[in-house]
Each structure stands twice: as C-alpha cells, then as structure tokens.
Image (cartoon, rainbow, N blue to C red; front, side, top):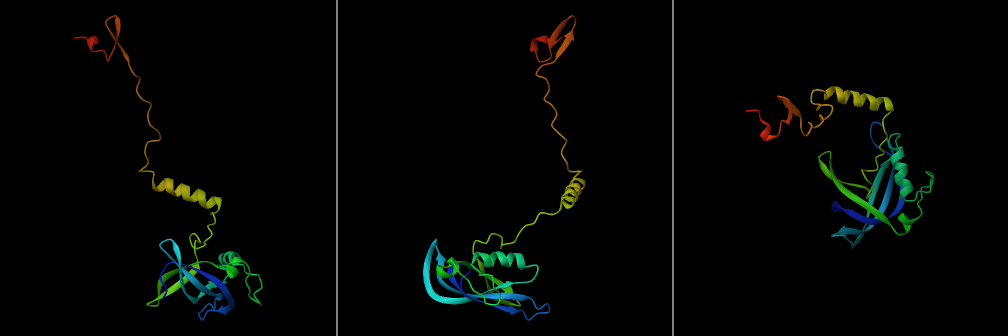
Length: 176
C-alpha cells in the first residue's frame, strides 16, 4: 500500500466500466504511472508503479468528472479514450488517501490540490436563503443582543441649586 501523501505521475490510459452494484453505475478507470513521491517538500524518485483512479459517470457525478477529465487533457471521445497535454507528457500531481471500505483499508486516488474534492458549491435559490435567514432570526430571537448601543451619556449635566446652575460633577457645587 502506498503512503497517504501526494505523488507525481503520468496518465497512461482510460477505460469505461460499469460498477457491479445495484445501480450499475458507469465509471471511467484511469491508469496512472507514479514516478515521484512528495517528501519534506521535495519530489523523491520512486520505482514507477501503476495505480487506477475511478471516476463515476452518473448524472450526479458528471459535472465533477468532466472537470477532472478536462484537467488531465481528455480528448472528449468515449469510444476511443485518449488524453493529450501535460498530464500525459510531463505528468500531474495525484493524492492518495486511505479509507475504510467493507472492513478493509484501501487507497483512494484523485487529483491533488483539487480543493474540497472538486465539489462545486451551487448557491441555493433566493427563496431558500430568505427562509434560512428567517429561521435563524426566529431561532435566535431570545439570544439576540439589544438592537443597538445606547448613546453615551452627556459629558456634564447642569442642576439648579438656588438661583445658580451647577455641574453635578463639580465637587465644590455640592449643596451641603
């Protein structure tokens, strides 16, 4: 098993397949040849090793898979899967993570530096945002601080003592 870290490698080939599951999910399987491992901020040569990357082609996964395929130079023909450009010629960075699946640890491969896994964040509709805001205000109404800070008190206030106005903060103006 490879270390859970980043690697550098070239895309070699791709094939289409269908998962052996209830949904029969279609996928593209890529063979990559890894040649370097990231270690202490440096690329270290390793004995070349092939790994397979699986990307689903279901309707839900399609936008994410397309972005990945574009990144590695897919030519766009699923009848004859081919790649061109840097990912084939010079290579690209890949990431290996370990995950548990059916009680076994396995490698999971994807493009490195893919952000949050390449997930596209689509803003909800305006009506949903308004509902979220209204719900938040309702849920937090009891904990809400006052609407604003009161204005600071005036620096001095005058009081009338006899016929003279005196400052209430004037120690000599205390009437006793």
